[in-house]
Image (cartoon, rainbow, N blue to C red):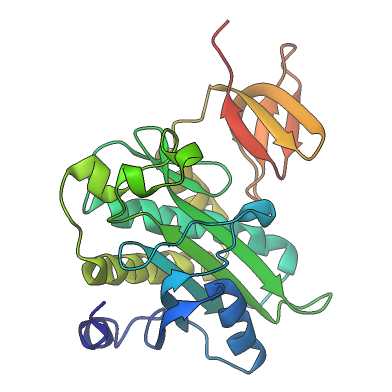
Length: 262
């Protein structure tokens, strides 16, 4: 990771003007949250070469080998109603998908709520965590993990058939510094859109990058299971599912998997 290159490239960027690079950390989200509590400026980015306790969604572990991928967390301080900040996960997904497409143009799609895929396999996960009191945000930490130069056999065995990397999909190494530059510029662009309050633009772009509309899916959250056909997304970023009778339900959280065609 060439920090001098990044510093020059992101000098005027809303996100990435300040980068904290760590050789090793337990979790970039944990580290960034501590910086946020100490008053870190908006747009501060924490990047680690490896994580010993990387955090995935719903308390899962995120595999974080050294020297090959991107593990980054961003401190943001938006103003307004915290209820609307769930949309930041969608913003991050758009930015990641667009950045990946500049290195791997084919097969990049978004899967609700927080995955980026290439040819149906997961290449990125996003973890958004809000830190603050009721009625105010304090700050948000957006964690982004992207599989860049990891090889299939380096994945844990249970991930080899469901995860991928830019290397596996393109057959060539990707410059991690160039990828970080592309990502932070796109994230800055879409965060500015988010700050305008025009969620419709964000929703339309997210849906354009997804292939979920019209698909029959199964959504699991703890011990609750919902099934139906994806019809869209509401103004908060929740998924809209229609059952066999056309009744539409709002899904705010869960793991989504495609159902077999009937």
